[in-house]
Amino acid sequence: MSLQLQEPLLPAGGAEIAASRGGFFLGVLRDRKSAVAGLGIIVFFILLSIVAPYISPYSASAQTCAVYAAPSIHHWLGCDDGGIDMLSELMQGGRISLVVGFAATLVSMVLGGGIGIISGYFGGWIDVTLMRITDYLLVIPDLVFAIVIADVWGASLFHVIMVIGILEWTSTARIIRAQVMSTKERVYVKRARAIGAGNWRIITKHIMPQVGPLLIANTVLTVAVAIYLETALAFLGLEDPTVTTWGTILEHAFQRTAISSGAWWAIVPDGFVIAAVIVGCFLFGQAIEDALNPRLRVAHLSVRRWRPRTLVGRGPGAI
Figure 1: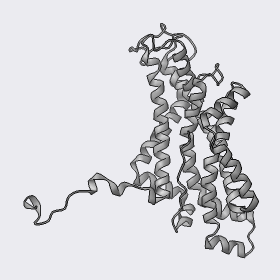
Figure 2: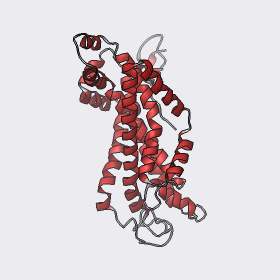
Figure 3: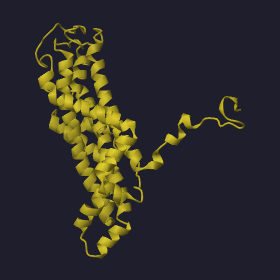
């Protein structure tokens, strides 16, 4: 599963956008409510994970109620098969799931961004070699490849992070490569090269500021994919069973007869928080993408804009 951005061309004033990157993101938040909603969801879960050890009502590893106890005033989301409070377990499990998601995305961003910049800037045999490797990895189904590698390497959080990072850098590399190939042909880059600027200076001073917002947009979308893959691998038993994550909570619920016991609270809240984080990342990343590439916007097709116009007269008597 991969959420791929289109390969956009930044507008002609791209240098101004890159020069005031903070202003660009503030503009996205100001103009797009979906960006505010997505960022709000992400920030909420990050803050909740940080303060989880201090505000959790119960221990996430000790029995505090009966097995599969129903939600009550003392246990808002009930308890799991071990009598552990579900709310506390979700809050603590979110810390590991988010760390895995962001760490795997960081690996993906560094690999994909670096390979995309090198391939797009230097071209030639370097570009051909790197893109052929990228193409080979792109055609392999993500989840199947992740299952095989995780099974071979063994159940470990570090292995899960590396597997997801290795899988998700390919789409980032192709997107960044396309933007770099466009940016390096612009007049200000050619002028910098003509006055003797070296490759390192051109890449760091002229290329990277241009692809920065695009890389961030793709990174936010990759976080959603990384959390999904982490959940899938944990659900299949390919993650460290001693660590509590959103994925292992689902795995234990399905393995330990939560469905046959009618304990929906052991499954539904966990699925909801996973879906909420993924939706938040998608909303924020998609808003940044739309701002970078106005051609992808479809707001002009809104139903509100297709109102019938009057032929004669104005006001209530118009026809």
